[in-house]
Length: 313
Image (cartoon, one colour):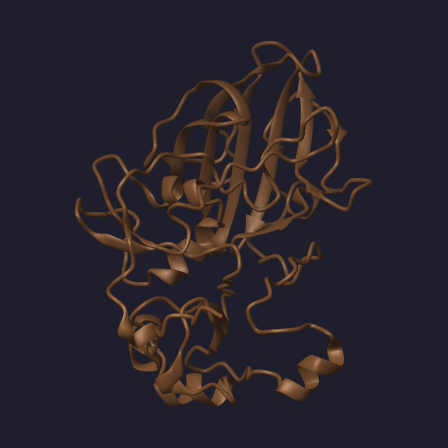
């Protein structure tokens, strides 16, 4: 049987140099095909590795390339300023197995050269807290690909015992976590009675799970020439084209909220622009599949999808 490499005894991770965009849309996104399947366009070549920032790169484009939520990428790189990425700067790209909830603990996959001390420095915690959350894990025998819990300062979560894991049938620590479709946090008080992104629209697909249990974003039908408008003040973190989603605008708002406008035709704002509520963002595109002018609209809180109707009036 081939032996698994030991984390502390191998050179640094492979660096992927090419970075494009295809959107995080966001664990829910991809774009629904007529058959109801979701197209995903993640690049396993960069997921889990270090990447080097090149001219024109943004956190959003890297997250989309890896098909991971933008919030997760940001939390895996707490020292990276999204507005001041430098050419040559290195970022750690998480995998779809890894998780980074706002309060912790993070679900982290061991990479070559990792130690509890190095992981603690990256996420602003202590080796002792990581050790306490991973009872039974030998710090000197970490394996590449092994999943560990990384509690943040102030968090109280601890890892379940091996016995409890066997009873629950969850298997080994390296099994991917199953995403939950249920909202996990309350909507901030600031996010109330926001306007809809279109003046003339009808909901042709509500936010929720389809017959296969796949979480789908909201789809709004409108008329020719309709413009999608920002639902609140914020910063445009992405404005460009994405595979399967046409042209897309992502706006970040206060209190860790994000709004996404996809299937656009003509973009009316640039990446990095500051926008106010009601600012036109894009003209809605025509869909050959539905023979309508459709806008895919999505809301996120801390990187997790929420029903837009919880926010919009």
